[in-house]
Each structure stands twice: as C-alpha cells, then as structure tokens.
Image 1 (cartoon, rainbow over the protein chains, first blue to last red):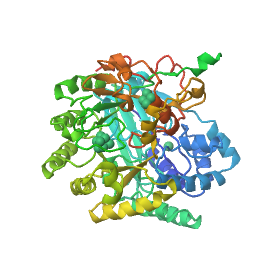
Image 2 (cartoon, rainbow over the protein chains, first blue to last red):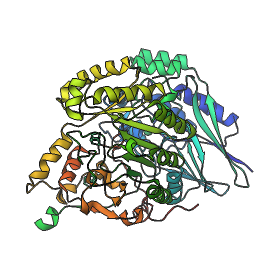
Image 3 (cartoon, each protein chain N blue to C red):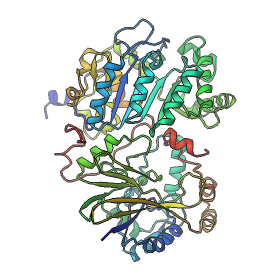
Image 4 (cartoon, helix red, strand yellow):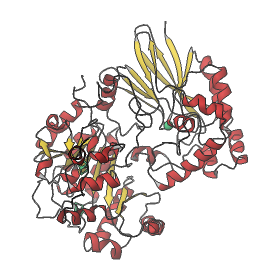
Length: 262
Length: 319
Ligand code: SF4
Ligand code: SF4
Ligand SMILES: [Fe+2]
C-alpha cells in the first residue's frame, strides 16, 4: 500500500495557514503530517499555533527559531550576515520572543533535532536546515548533487527533507536518493502568489517515490490585518499580500534572487 | 596543560570539504591593487594560469568527495584564456562564484557567461571588487581608470540579467558605512543596477596583514589556548581547500606560502593544518571574508555517532 505523508515547515506564526493545512493534507490522503520547525517569526500572535499542533498531535522537528526562543537566546540564529536582513530579523525575533508564553518556550526547547521514518522500507530523515546543522541553508541553485549524495550517505538516509530557506525544491539524486525542501507555510515563496507551499511524499510498495508540492490557499487578507493590528513591519505585510519577499533578501543566491522583484 | 602545549599553533582538522577554490589565474592580474594580499600583478608568476587539463581532474575528484560549491579567484580569473571552459564544466556539477575586478569584460564574453548560466540549474555568481563609489575614492587603491572600467563591466553584467555582488574593502570609518552605501547605490542605479547586492569587507584586514608580515611579534600567532571555546567555522580552512597550478593548498590567503601547500590531489589535503601563519590571526579575529553569505554561525546538531562518521568525505560517495 502506498504510504503518504504531508511535510511542512516555516510556520512563522501563520496560524491561519496552519489551520488550512491541517484540513487540506488529510483530504489529499496524507495519513500522517510532520512539521519541520520554525514555528515563530514574521507573523502575528505566536502562541496561536501551539494548540493547533498539539490538538492534531503533529510531530515537530526543532528549527533554529524554536531553539532560540526555547533557550532564551539573544537572536534567531537565522544565519543572516547583512545589516538590513538582521534589522528585520531582530524586529521579528523580539516581537516573537516577547509574545510567546513560557510553557510554549519550554515545549519548543524540548523538540527533537530530527525525526526518522521508514516508509515502505525507504529511510526518511526529517530535519530543519540540513542533517548536520540546524541553520544550514541548502538552496536549490547552490547545492551540488554530489554534496546531497554525501549527506544521504553520511546520515544513512534515502530521502532527506528540510525547510529553513522557505523555498521548496526537490532533487532526485543520481544515486537514487532524494533531497526535498518542503518550503514554508508561513510566507509565500517569492513567486508573486499569495499561497504558501508544503510537500506530499508518497512511497508505494515497490519503494518508488513521488514528491508533490501543494499550493495552499488561506485567508491571507485576515493575516495581513492581524499583522497590521500588531504593528508588524509594513514590509512583512506586503509580502503576505503580494507574494514577493521584501526583506531578508541578501542571503539568497543569484538565481533565487533574480526570480523575485526585490 | 603546560605552557608549551597551549602556546603552540593549533592543529585545525578539515571538518568537511564543502567549498573548493580554484586559483585559476594564479598570482597574475591585469591590475596591481595596493591592498592585494598576495601582491598579484601582470608580472607575479609565483603561481601561474591553470590549464583546463590541470583543472579537470581536481573537479572530478571534488565531485567524488561531495564538494558543495566552487569558487574561482586569482589574480583575475578572466585573464585565463580557458576560464569559460572551466566554468562550463563546473556549472555542470555545481554552483560557481567568480571573484573578478570586472575590467576585462566585453559584450561577447558576458553573453557567453549568460548562456552558461541559463543552461545550468546552478547559480553563477560574480563578485566584483570596487573599493570606492567614484574614481576619486576607488582609483588610488585599484589603479587609474579602474572605477570607470569596472562600472562598465557591472553595467554589462546587469544588462545581461546578472546580479553581481559588489564587494568593497572598508577604507573609511565603520560609522560611515551608510553614507558609503547610499553614494554607491546612487551610482549603481545610474547604470541600471537598481537592486544592488553589496558586501563590505572589514576594514584594513588585509592591509594590517601586510604590515604584520614585517613585524613578527611574539604573541602574533593563534595558539591552542585561543581555540578553547572558539567557533572554528569562522575559519575558511575548516571546510575548504584551494587548488592552484602547483597543487592543493590550505586556503586562498596562504596560497603563495610554500608550507601551506598540502599535496597534489585533494586526497592529500584532507587532514588538518597547523595555523602557524601571521595571517591566521587575522582570520581568527575577523572571521571568513571570502564566502558569499559570510560565515554561518555554529549551532551544529549533535548526532550520535557523528564524530566517528564525520561529514568529511574521506570515503567518496558512491554512484
Ligand atoms: S584585482 Fe584583485 S587580484 Fe588583482 S591586484 Fe587587485 S586585489 Fe589583487
Ligand atoms: S589564513 Fe585563515 S583560512 Fe588560512 S590557514 Fe590560516 S586560519 Fe585557516
Ligand atoms: Fe530556520
């Protein structure tokens, strides 16, 4: 029997997209749903996502944001190196940190760094950035296939799934393994569309692998007005309303940057 | 620990061979900037131009080791007559970043670069060094006429759809950064670059280095004691190596130092390196200055057994 799971990450406090996903994924035949972390940042009311995740009993991998907020660290460990990127990263970190309840911080602190699954004999490794470092950026256009094969070998996995960059992509590797970035449901994929993205992974009884990226519609207008009411930066609201990234752009490789308008 | 233990320069193992540099132009450059840390010039033949046939076996070996990305430097990479073949072969297997002074471009060359960029699934990054926003501020450092030439190169790159990363070494006070960036962005906008990517390199890093070379002070070394609690991912040599026409060296900064050559093939270079040079203390203090996004800070995930099975590709990936 085909095993199908839904995998999402980069929630960024987008509780409306999370609620939409929890309805959408089972409808598409996902027997289980997994979250790859970064629950806070960017969006409004960080505490709202926790009851949703707990109620649906979603296993969650710890993201760098969760690690930071959970351990009372001074910053989000997003790995930005540009002053302007860091300015916006600081705004959202301070807001998220101040508005997350202590019990949710503890819960995030105790999340696992990885989850391993066996789907019809195929070894799946769920992580946040890369299996070796929580905040490693693995971009589609700056990560060689040879490197991804090395990760699969070193970490004894047939499929590695991460998030962290916020852009979804998939590579079938020459050695038969796979790398998947499931994207983010917290903000659009810098593609001029207001939907957000997650991944459906299906593995049939012959161990053949199908990866599908699902565009998820949700009430983005409501999210935008909640963000405004919380005085979050207009730049963030613009991303939700237009689908184009306006901040944290300096970290993008050339091709990913060129696809956007800013 | 005794004093002699901790005063020694530390031995830094290669954590993982992620980044491979190619010194494709050796120490040869059409310019002779006064801050150039390996004193490149049209006459400096310490390291020569790398031929395609020298380059290709290293690229193949790098794929075996699972290298993630490739960087090209010199000297000026575009004085190498085989640079296009070299970049094309690279873009078939991974991303490429070229550090250039942008003074040697023509429309034909840029069209060729754009073609190979579009044919690859990987990014082709161009990092253009310009050290001031005007001839008056740049040319004293990089040479007469270089501002106009380099800006013309940038204009052509942008017109061809590239988003070059403009890098400038800070020769002003740090509090003047915003002013510098504002001035430079205005100049770039005039030539059509409306969303410039810019990177400022820390002040005087290299210049200080040159001065240090003459004055070996007793405490001017990295010591083992200094490595306690230090995040070694700040150092380029923890996850990269550089290949020249002479072999494999520990890092681009020491590429012209005889004791920084580690061997002929990548396999010879997979052990660590003792950080015995004056330049190492500059790296130690200021961190990596060469990668596109700067260094990615710590927070490595502990994984059971990861020490015994380091991400270093000492066993080539199969395929
Ligand atoms: S352009 Fe670069 S390599 Fe050439 S002399 Fe100047 S700093 Fe050195
Ligand atoms: S100069 Fe820097 S990168 Fe090179 S060996 Fe010394 S510490 Fe490492
Ligand atoms: Fe993240």
